[in-house]
Length: 201
Image (cartoon, rainbow, N blue to C red; front, top):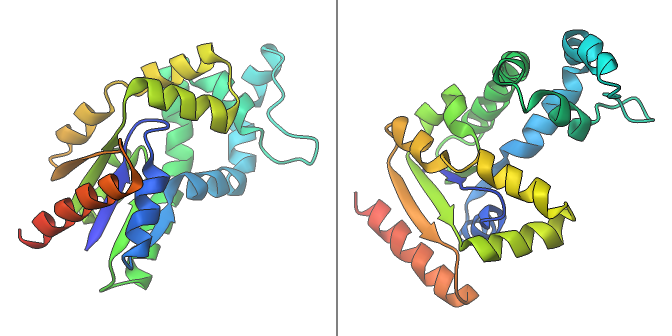
């Protein structure tokens, strides 16, 4: 079985993945894959965006020469065409790495922990989508504690993901909602009922 665990920022995707790992699932974090791919594609990214970054007085590299992902995001995320340009650079390699993970673990229960899997072809290899939801206030508190970002920036990120569920529905994937609220035991029981229903399909 191949599951995609997704959901908006600070909904608890990693927590749900950890519960599934305790049940024997093997997981891959697509965000970490993307971070590594961005570094692998550093020269292409710098070639594509350095001129614009310089005009806006944004430095795309850290002191050690690695890509400053936060600066890159600041540069491109307000312009859909720039986001698309970056995606054309990195998404083929992300797809390749995720598909390789699936091939290498054929026959095992797998999790792809990914916010934007609907954007890559790997979604066609997934059996079910587990969409993690959590109350807005809980998400704000988690995001503030975890990332230490200003509230305005958290709100902007939340706003950018407000149509995430709709985008997954458009992929025609089989989606099950996992509510991450209540005690650990409550969430575990909720998740087990979903797994039982999937097994019965």
